[in-house]
Length: 217
Ligand code: SF4
Image (cartoon, rainbow, N blue to C red; front, side, top):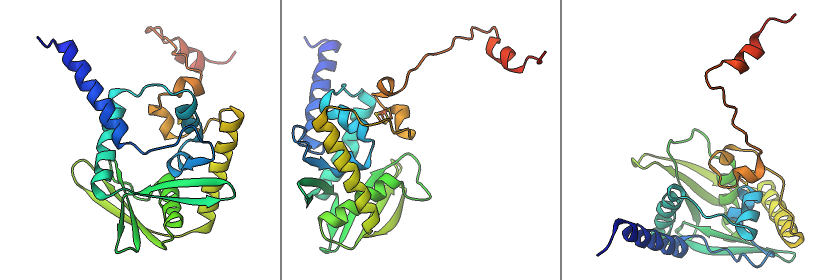
């Protein structure tokens, strides 16, 4: 008979398989091929994912599954931009009328301005597909959306190439990139590799506050 433990193992195995099938394909053994998702996010995270990965927890597995499943349902076109021995790879969610590149981002709350890393990513897609304009569409689980139009920008692309090159070099040298403090760190599985963390136990004594606010002698 199927026990609850076996059932959980079967579900987890299938989730892992699905995640592998749907996730962005990155040639992790080739440091001359960098995916734009690696270069526009935290490069230290990308380094750990290639060199010394930790398993992802169920919450991040499921949220990346939902995002990736949606991207695949739209077409998920792959492209690349080659520059002096480096290949920058991209995946666009949708190309409309052979003219506009579209990228979707699933978020909890709609942003008022686009996130810089999403702008950099979409701009890299414009270069890889040789298009001039794209749309960044944010959507929530409740179906609310907001769109931003993005036009091709050389300076933003140079920054992505620079970051891809740094990651490529550090992968070859076996050195982790520097810590990039951002909101991504809060839910990152490599948090403890980047930041020393020691929880201070107050245990209701008010010791820390007393020390801070005690009158100076
Ligand atoms: S904790 Fe922050 S700096 Fe460290 S790998 Fe994660 S996102 Fe990057």
